[in-house]
Length: 350
Image (cartoon, rainbow, N blue to C red; front, side, top):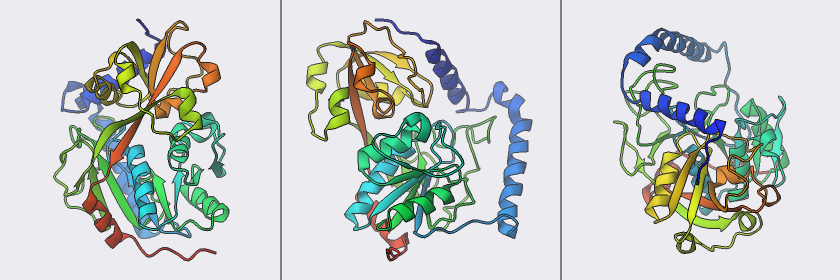
């Protein structure tokens, strides 16, 4: 089985850069002046917010921002999904707002529905809506997304912002920082390193840290969560049912092409192999659009992530059997108590 689309080459180049960011080297040294410029501009922007020249805008509900300091995907979306489920258990009615990265939505806000086009609203917002059933709104300005969502769904008691840690125009009540096994990489800011902002010397107020790799990867105190392979559906079943019908045992008997449009697809491939599946790896660029199928038309079996599945409809894959592997994130039990202490009381609904 072979598959080597142009997108796979772009994915390999992106993976190469992510690997280079893990330790100082000559390639990063060349980019240090650009990192200093990035640091200066970021610091100036934050100072303008502190002085009140630029303003953070409050929205009608408490806001929890789930974000990360590092570029290249740290597992925010699974944490958002798990957090939405936890908030429901705590008696809240959560909604989700997002920029809708990769989508072509206009400057206004757009509500995400089951039939939304991921090319318009972004693949991750659509996935969050499909997995949780929570109302989701996207807009380049998260404040507009929050206002639109609260107006359309007045029963919502708390908003979860998928990404947006550096989006200072949105006032927030709580930040949740997500780290994977890379920690802060080489410790340098973009583009010489992976950091969007420096690691703080101490845990900032009203901030919780989640480590998704089973152990801490920075000096900040935090909670240990873990990602795990969940149910595997046929693409047809994934779109129409919530039934828990795992097919891992059945799939161990056949070769699979594993395709993943993620920033770091290696973790997904490793999970599949740990289940005894025989896969050929097909890494694709993050947010790969699937406008053209990246595998040969005679490929019998392909397994993808849910982030890929939102861009694949059963009538587009021909005779290929596409399987969808869900990825779940488990939050530790003591995280709920910490969240409860920091989360403001739910705003009354109208």
